[in-house]
Length: 216
Image 1 (cartoon, rainbow, N blue to C red):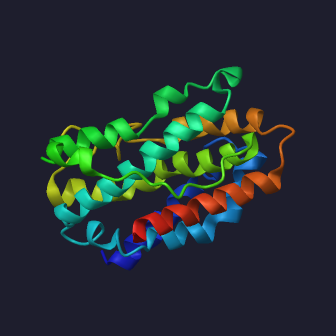
Image 2: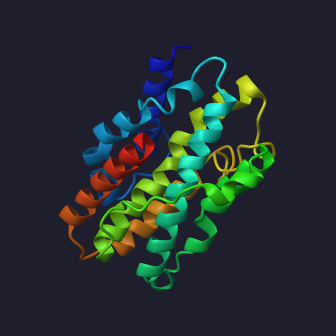
Image 3: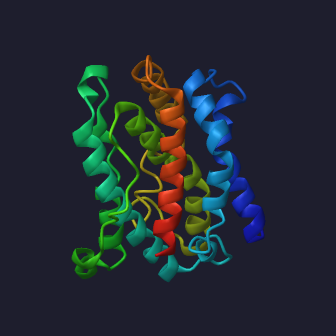
């Protein structure tokens, strides 16, 4: 399968929640998806990801991608968790942290001694309001859907699985949709009364910031 076809498949992964027997997603989720589709497609075609989607995939480039994602997730999760009242909506943010899973993967892949040298992203999106935090969180959680194709390629090409370097990509198991639906239900409640425009702009800005971080 060509890289271009694989990236096309990756860009459709986040659209599947509205098809088949899955329950209809809340309005805010459909709005955010529709307003970020092009930015999501642009990110999946980033040159940093191409060698990971190649056949066979590059182990070295996968490690580089993990390092970039660790620097992004570590900074984003710390800021997002501290700026929003997650308990108000009975949302266990601590159960959805991904940075520690990426760190586990790096250690398994032999990068234990380099973790302390990985820079954290400092050019983060604006997280100054609840609406902006929700928009950014939408992007962070959406990564778990697109991760499935990356995992499939690494599993078949390098024989990696959740215990040998892909715990982050398999953070919710082989089917991330139940967690995505649960997240949609949270977003439906938490976004009530907040500005749609703020959430959309924040999600778009988050995609752009991540794209820029991948290019540094």
